[in-house]
Image (cartoon, rainbow, N blue to C red; front, side, top):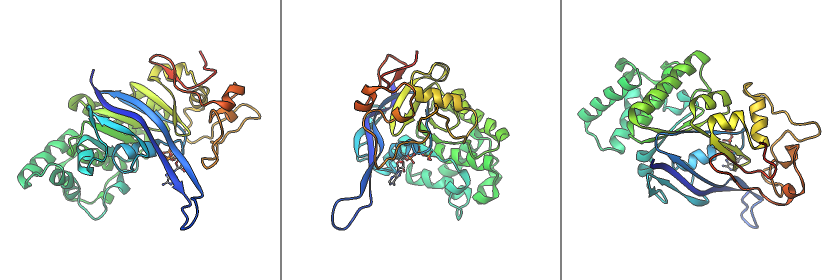
Length: 316
Ligand SMILES: Nc1ncnc2c1ncn2[C@@H]1O[C@H](COP(=O)(O)OP(=O)(O)OP(=O)(O)O)[C@@H](O)[C@H]1O
């Protein structure tokens, strides 16, 4: 199977509190070096609490943020220093909040036309034909084309967001919490549509979400992010039913109540460490019931075949 997306030691550090004179106040390692391969046609779920680096990772993948280190390859071609249009044709982003991610001053037709003109140089007749084709694929009526984003329900607006991403003809979509702003009944419709499009168009998805139940249902594999690092990766059914990393177990036990604070064993921290003052060793150790001396000294790396975890005391 060929590899759609390959990340090699991809990382992002933000410099915060820049001063005119003197050193910056600090650095936030939002994404530690991440190495991952996503085979063509796979849905890779990415889960983790707020602040663990999901959006930073996703933004680097679509060229919205410049990586500090490492590289991104799509279908074997590096994307280093690529033009935004090159990113756009290879990988597209579907945003969490569909209505506010669409330009409120443009009609849906204008929104759809932009990528067709800019990325594919299509003339008017070609654009009209392509827009009709895409609208049929996402089950939207063409009469919607002359309306503005605020005239739509959340579910319709998310279909428009998906339609816009399809217009670029990219084979990889980053779905950033694509259904979490929608009513439960509409969530299922949008997830079914995404599944159908993936089959029909041979797409590869990165599906980012807080909602483990949704991620488990839609993903082939899952990567668990903690404090900017992938701490566990494996087949979706294995990762949640048989977690190897104590953090994944904590996440799985906290599901499916979205937004509920994670619980921790008595006497243990419940919060993420301070990103400006990261701990030495394993970033999860203050919350971990199994933490020992080695965890305070060394950063565990991903180990294992297929199902991998970055832990000195993995659960079996
Ligand atoms: N522009 C920035 N400057 C400084 N720090 C940043 C910036 N963007 C993100 N961060 C920090 O990087 C870390 C990762 O943030 P990120 O938004 O990627 O997490 P997330 O998992 O997507 O969170 P959420 O689910 O809330 O969107 C956090 O500590 C955050 O405060």
